[in-house]
Length: 149
Image (cartoon, rainbow, N blue to C red):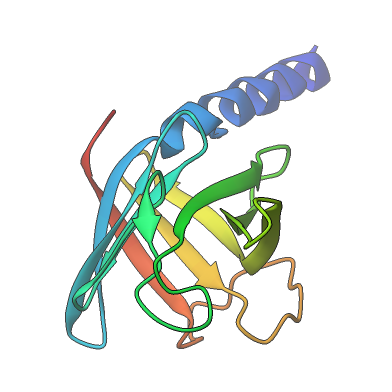
């Protein structure tokens, strides 16, 4: 009897504290090296990033410089919610000069919810593909939910 009750409690608390994709939707704010910024995750997979004067509207971003200057780009996210530590990728796409869609993952990382209004986000700039977040890493930010969508 005790074993059944223990298994029931573990399942119950596991379901109560597991995160779903809907928990990610909304505007999340934080500070990195003294600069305030935000990430807004939309239900259609687009993301908006505002950080230190940089404003990337993932639905309709005009590339400001470089060889693709002036092209309209989109930025989406993909996330795997099957584990407690959520793997994510940011994916940019735009039409090339022959009107062919170009797409590339440009940043991977991890998300770990602390609670429903706070999560840690790790950016894997070195492409090491870690499975957990080291809170001492300079590539980790704490984001707080400003508003839901």
